[in-house]
Image (cartoon, rainbow, N blue to C red; front, side):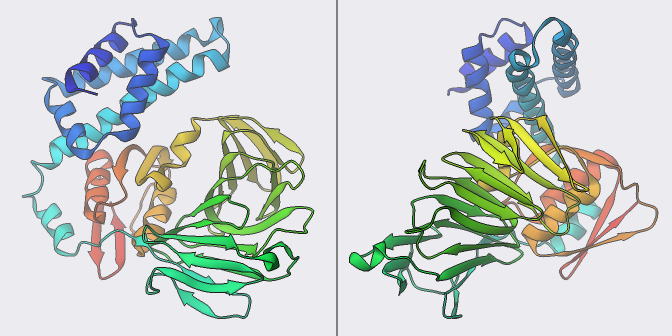
Length: 378
């Protein structure tokens, strides 16, 4: 969209005259905006704080009207309002950062800056051979059970059945592992697509043929787009839970260092430990108990789309995400309030100093980088 169109949509939103289609347009722009667009969005506003206050007022107004409307009808508008607010948060960050680069604290972070992660993974074949996908040449990697395994130039591993051997049942299993600071995409033998986040592992059959179910095992985090097959349900096993689907899009966060397992549904339906999940719902498994809540599902797949999307996220959770993506160790020094929360959107492909600068200015914390260790100080 042109900048004039975006400004008009924002003004319509403030005046409560935006149609559902216009709200959808505004939300779609937010999903694809670049850092440069965020900067101009901040700069065209003469009073950033007034703008932010106006947005908060509108969000509060919408929430206050919840008693007169169903939650499902209200949610898209609240989601759009929250999305706009996050745009402003990111805009203010980029806008003010231009004036912060000369400060001593910022110079210290920049001097020891750490680059973001990238497409890095290891493929373990059924014979135990371990292949570094980072170093392997593009093209065919191996053949197992009549299936060709190949690496593409854009960071994917693809499984393709070749010849009559491809229809045979096989017990062969493969594993794809991402290190801290790595991510990767794999297209499974049935055509399903899986995006692996940092420090994650997926175990799966080389071929699903002859199996009653398509079963994979996950530790860490992955986003799934499952090829529909009513005769062969797809099952994701992770920490104390099983997700059963026919064809759908969903995200599973099941890191061993996280207090709970979160499964978020974007499209279709899934069954988790006997409970059916619908789009824009999230199942949270904590302490052996499963609960379901309504969420803006797309905000939980930010990592796949190259963003950190924090919404009232506690400091320890934020730092665990940074540790996995930037491959750093985190230390807390002094009396740090662990309940401190953060909201905002930052590109995953920025160096770590940009994220830390945002956090410093929003909550009065200080960060120090030494080698691959980030220390959080009051």
